[in-house]
Length: 440
Image (cartoon, rainbow, N blue to C red; front, top):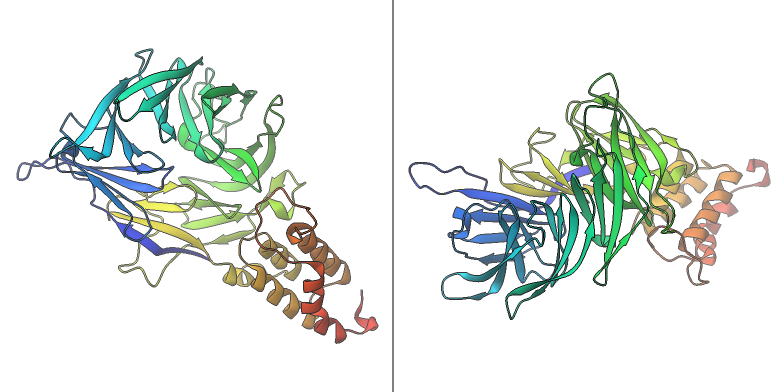
């Protein structure tokens, strides 16, 4: 049901300096543009950015000003950030050159403090997060200058930027367990209510950035936190905190996903499904909170192993410790020099979900599965595998989720349009075969 590698792209693996060539290759993942960025010899032999799209390649050459700590592209792909110093970044104009190398200019933090993170807010705005503040800069590409637009004081240990909602979540407090969200919109900071999270480890340890994921589930922004057992490294669950639409209210814990095992985890959120990969047992646990939205605790709906795509040759290595995972569905193998897309095969869901009503409800929530939903529903009706109350619930759910012509809508993204008449017409032949004696 999970397949890796149908879409993939190769890149040059990282190499350390050696005595023969003296060449160094570094790779960075741009998690906003979903591109793998390669810097060769600190840019003097070129910088390259590739995505999974065919022929989507950006390349340029820069002067060697030292090894970068990161590379990130602007949303339009015309500018790039290279961080070579602890308190400044270089802005590279990828489409302009002064001869052999691209034009660039330096932007230091206003406070001169060390940069914890830097992100593109728009094509001409960047955000610095330092230990003491947020700093929003506007860039003038023609003049090659930067101007401070806004600052906000905050004590930060690390931060995560969620570009889809222009949201930055800053970890504060003695154990980094107080999360402070900010909206960064229209050149302004909007400070939302902070909230405390649990992560279960001893009081002398800090919540780490790698154990936190910011995502969207059925139209709601959520912060997911891996909570560990106080006895040691056993991960007990994944906590999901939902940010309310009311900016004056703090996020609250909405769900707890039971994992029940220890070791290394990776997380993807694909089509509103939370997929938790466990390297030790080489399995992936799939959760769908929409099936029981009022239940606070969830167990895995499906536990499967990822299969390599037959079109990917050589086949990708699976569940290896060096995997790097990025939202929503990216897996990077730095040793093989490959970036893969993880694909959800809804057509195989019937092999894992045997209860028909649950299967159909699961498919209703998936994107682009209109025909599969109707085919599965029709076959279940013909086989008399559904009780009348289940049929009623499924029809109500289909109409609620997908009949948008009357203006009704759900919290989740729209998957497809279908009205009650279409469903009734499509399935009426199966009802003709049912007698009143079969009703339950």
